Length: 210
Ligand SMILES: Cc1cc2nc3c(=O)[nH]c(=O)nc-3n(C[C@H](O)[C@H](O)[C@H](O)COP(=O)(O)O)c2cc1C
Image (cartoon, rainbow, N blue to C red; front, side):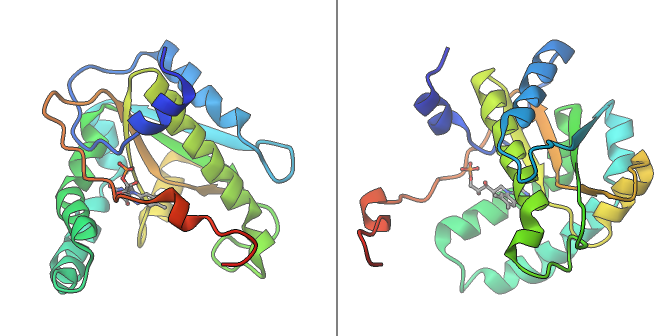
């Protein structure tokens, strides 16, 4: 078993999956980690829709290809000269894989969270985002638990109509919001792992003043 700091090191975004599928037993353990994350209101109102079967997944993510192509054609080209080079390398690898990575693992998890009060995209202040923040703490717990189990993950943040499309397609209740398309599987043998930016932690820690 990896220790916690090994898990932190090992957790990387993997966008190339093998044929091996995560079992229901492992998946339940990994998804259970979501309910160990801190939540703003103590209630942990997360619901996880698991979609298996490549055709089912393809149907659910059908807006992804078109939406991504648009970014690839406009954003990525425009960014080539201005982006950080590791950032550009990451987007160049990631964008063409958005649709495939979600289908390939054959296990797509759709984490939803209950959003009370302010509509998600119209927050009044920072605390209106508490449900969103809690949901993402839960997603990170899932990523770390999956890593500890030897699994690999990739996720996509919904853009454009993707959230609404998914909510409708799975019949999510109105007060629930969608976090991301989360693929959980096992890394392909030759899976690409993007270079992580080198950060000197000491330089980022400021004593008393910035
Ligand atoms: C808020 C957020 C949004 C992200 N959106 C996407 C996405 O839409 N598609 C994707 O392939 N990866 C996405 N990622 C993954 C990042 O590209 C990845 O975490 C980053 O490149 C660092 O690499 P690492 O996870 O291997 O450390 C996202 C990550 C975060 C935290």
